[in-house]
Length: 329
Image 1 (tube, rainbow, N blue to C red):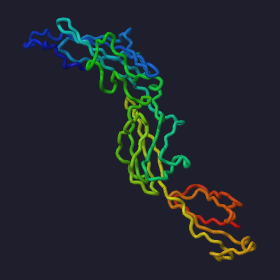
Image 2: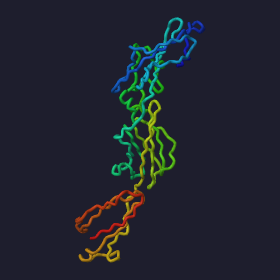
Image 3: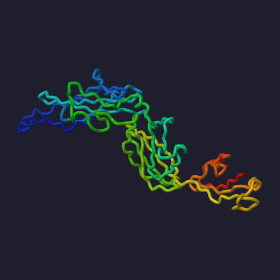
C-alpha cells in the first residue's frame, strides 16, 4: 500500500517551515457487508480486522489481508488511512479493495442469445432485410456470486462526514457511488466475421448494461455473419459465445409453369377429360436460403373458389435448391 503525496501546509503563513509536519500514518481495515435490492452497502465499523501504524517519512507498507485459511468467498474491504501531524491534527481518507480468487462467469442457458434483427419464424437465424444486424444476450452471462451478493451497489458515507470529496473513493473500479454491472459483468466486447472468415478486432459494446448491440454492415444476400460476444467480470474473468445469422431478403422464384400432357407443354385445356389427364409443372428455387415448403391451390378462377389447398414439404433448408414439383389435376 502506497500513500505518498501528503503534506502539512499552512496556507495563510508564507513560511511553510512553521507547519508542524506529518508525524505518522495509521491504516485500518474493515469489511464491507453486501446489501440487497439496490440498498447502499455498509462498512462494518464494529469489527476492525487490522490496524497498522507507519511513522513518517515512510509512505508505503505491505499489508497481509485478514483472511481465514482456505477462504473461498470473495470479500470487499474498506481501507481507512488516517494522517496525523505533530500538532495532532488528522485527516482521513478511504479506498476499497476486492478479494476474489474463486468466482467465474457462466451462462443461463434458458436466457436467449439471438439476432433480434432476424426472423422469429426461422428461430432468429435468417435476416430478411438489409438493415442493421442486431444481437441481444439479456441476462445470458452471469457471475452467480455477485448476483447473490450485491457488493457493487455503492457504499454509505462515513458517519459524521469525516471523509468527503476527493478523500473518498470517487473514481476507479470500486467508487463509493457503486460500480455499474450486470451480475458482476462490467464489460462486453464483440467481434464479427463474414462468411466464416477472420474475425475483426474486438470493440467494446457501448452502453453494455443494455446487453445488446446493432451494427450497420455492408450486407448482401447469401452472406453469413458470425458475431462473438465476450463477457468480462469485475476481476477479469471472461467467457465467449458466438451466434451466426444468414442474410436473404430475396423472395423465392417460380418459373416455367406449364400444363403438360404426353410430353407437350404450354397446353390449354378445353374439356374435362383432357383436364383429368394433365399435369402442371413448374420450377421453384431460392438461390440463397433454399425452399422449405410449397403451398398450392386448385380452384375456379371466375369465382375464386378454392377446391383443394395443400402444402408440400421440401425438407431441410439448403443454400441452393432447384425443385420441380408436379401434381395431377
